[in-house]
Amino acid sequence: MRLQDKVAIVTGGGSGFGEGIAKTYAREGASVVVADIGEAGGLRVVEEIRQAGGRAVFVKADVSKAADMDRLLAAALEHYGAMHIMVNNAGTTHRNRPMLEVDEAEFDKVYAVNVKSIFLSAKTFVPHFRKVGGGVFINIASTAGIRPRPGLTWYNGSKGAVITTSKSMAAELGPDNIRVNCVNPVISATGLLAEFMGVPDTPENRKKFVATIPMGRFSTPQDIANACLYLGSDEAEFVTGVCIEVDGGRCV
Image (tube, rainbow, N blue to C red; front, side, top):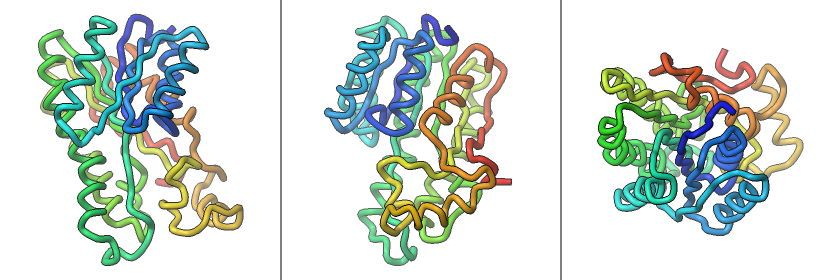
């Protein structure tokens, strides 16, 4: 197992990419803290992991709150006695529409969940990783931060911030044996799909977006989990500051 004896926290772990990452990590031997703002999804994922023979606990958490980040670290240490991998997956978006139609509250929420969460996770987990001699951050950004789609301007900017921040963290924290990497998914059939498209989720509307992806399909949670598995494993012990586009060629 590629993550045997590792302890990981996965935010937004109750659905979508986070669910795929949490289940893959558990299958590969990690003990997982599934964090989500929604209890129902998080508890379901934990139960399914346990039913499959894995180890997982659920912690309700709002990633834009410092106290909740602190509780995630405390939960990992309480249940498993260690903490090795922080997957900052939780994210949100405004609906796809002209940039001036997005109001201030929507903008603030997007940046709180997508960007401030990275800041808060660093404030909580960097001191711990320094104390124990190293650790791993994996930040789920987006192809939107590299090849923006019209109508998602403020979301695109938030993901660009995640990418640049991750690279800067990697440069600064490398001497502490703390690795920081990104995964950039292309659009996926997750709960936010209609918001990303800005139109109803119909087969016809999906085709328009699939047409922009050379390999001809959306990304899946397993696609993203596979990249996170590599970056969290010891196979990637000399890999830091990179962004892996899991996008079927969208960013080519």
